[in-house]
Length: 569
Image (cartoon, rainbow, N blue to C red; front, side, top):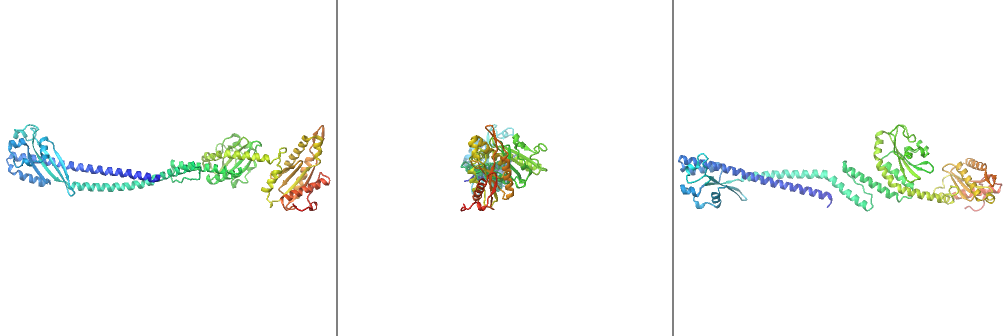
C-alpha cells in the first residue's frame, strides 16, 4: 500500500471514529435528556397528586380519590399511576385501597430508603419509563404533614407514587435526530475526504516521488524528476531536488566525456535549455599566457566585439575572483560593457593554470536579477565540473607535450599523423611548405649542437611570426620543418614563404667569437591543385624542397609534375 492510500485510510478511519463517537454521544445525551425530561414530568405529577390527595383529605372528599387519579392519568398521559402507603401510614390509617402484598421490590425499596428509582423498559415496539417517587413527611410544608400524620416524624416516608409512561415519541425523536446527525456526518465525511484528497494528495505524491527519487539516487540513478503542482515551500524542495538531480546527472555524464570540448557543449546546452539564458559566452583562460579564448557562446554573440579582447588581465572577474554585476556601477567592466545591456560575469577556478569565465547578458534589470538568483545553482554545475575539467586539462597538457617538440615548442611528426587523419578533410584547400636549413650539418660539426639548437629555435620563432593562428608549423625532423597554410593561392603562399626566408636570413648567430648567417630552401605544393591526396601534397612539397637544394639552395621552388616520375604514393 502506497503512502497516498495509507494517509487516506488514516483520514477515513479517524473521521469515521470521530463520526461514530459523535453519534454515540448524541444518542446517549438525547437518551439521558429524554429520561431526565420524563423524570421531571413524573416528579411534577407526583407533587400534583400529593397536593390533590391532601386537598381531598382536608376537604373530606377521599371517596373521589380514584376519580382524581384516573383524571391525572388521562390528562398527564400516564399509563399506570398508583399511590401506596408506608407501613406507619397503614398502622395509622389502615391499608386503604392498596394491597401491600402486591408491592413490588422497587416500591418496597423506595419506601425503605426514601429515594426515588427510575427504570426504563425497552422492547422492539415500545419504551416504558417507570418512576417510583417517595412522599417524605415534613412540618415545613403547606400544609404541615405532621398535623395529620401525628404518628410520623420529620423525614419519615409516608408513601410513594408509581408511574409508568410510554416514551416512544421521545425514542422516535431520538432516532430522527440520530438519523439527521448521521446524514450530516456522512456528508461532512465525504466533503472532508474530498478536501483532504485535494490538499493532501499533492503532498503525499511529493513524498512518494521524493522517496523514489532518493532511493534511485542511492543506487546511482539521477535520471528522476519530481513533478508537483505545489508552489509553496514543498514545491521549492521538489525543485531543488530536481536541480540536484540534474547536477549529479550532469557530473555523471561529463565524467565519461572524452574531451573538455564536449563538457563545454553540455554547459552551453544547460545554460540555454535548463536556465533559459538567451545570451552568454564562456571563456577559457590560460594563466601562463594571460590569454583567454571563447569556447562556447549563444548565437547572438558569435561575432561580438567582446571576443576581440584576448588579454586576460583586462577581465575584471578573473582579476578579482569576484562576480561582476553591471548594476553595481556604470561600466564596471569596460571589457564586458555593451550598450543597453546588463551583464553578470562569473569566474570559476579550475587549476593554477586554467580558469573559466561565464558572461551572461540580460536585456533589462529584472532579467539580470533573475539570472542573479540562478548564480548559486549555476555555480554548483561548475563546481562539480571542476575536477573533471582539471583532469581533462591535465590530459590535454600531457597530450600536447607528447605532440610537441621539446626544443621548439612546435608540433611534431606524431601530431602531423593525427592531424592529417582527423582534422584535415580532403575537401579543404591548403598549401604545404617543406623548409630546410641549408648546410645545417656544418653548424653542428663546426660550432656544436648547442649552437645548432639555437639556430633551430630561431627558425621556429620566425615561422610562428609569419603564419596565422589557424595555420600550423611542425618540426618534421632534424632541421626540416613543415608548414600547412589553409590557403591554396600560390601568390599568397609564395609571399609568406619569401617573408620566412628573408627574415631568417637576417638572423645573426654568434659562436666562438664568430658571427654567421644561415639560409633556407623551401619546397611548396598546393592541394588539390598539385596533389590528389593529403599525404601526396606533403610528399610533393618534399620533392620540391629536394629540387631547391639540388639547384643551388637558398630558394623557393613550387612542385611541378616533371619533378616526380615515380608511381604515386
